[in-house]
Image (cartoon, rainbow, N blue to C red; front, side):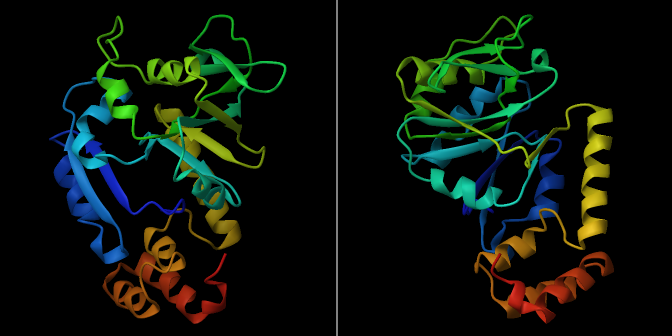
Length: 251
């Protein structure tokens, strides 16, 4: 939403789908359109483009992994520049343990020259976070990807396809950007503490969907007021504080 994306497909399991639907609904009340697709068995990240073929149609698209959290000043504006791209756009983030991630190797001119998945001897300390932008060709490319040894269509194979065609661009996320992969219990706890500390110290919510929709002018101040009246006490006070100080609407 901060990147200006208003049409979103959420891929989940048939078991979890009712919970997401109850929590988020159609997205209409916050000025977006939500649709859902079911993936009951692990088919790989690249399978998202096959499941979402009818949703994507003939458009460029973005993919973000549900257990990845990104936070940083100006990040939304930075991502807005990728709505129309020729090829693929990914990001790089410096980590202390690149062996746990997909890793990008850079050439002397700063361009990507190779991508390895969880290498034993990483060629750089730059990992690939779970946030990607692709042109309209990605669906056809995904259909041509063969499953790996673990039986899944790997996103790295799509990235290598674009890389071999010289259509993959990489942008290093600034040092002030936080990327949290919450795929384990301990990392999920770390992310919770990170969000709690920032929100308590700054008095601002991280990823309050109603606030983002309002700041993007997808909903009016009156609509935000109506939403705040139906919210829990936890959210009502915060949304009301935004309305009282409407001068902060433009970031």
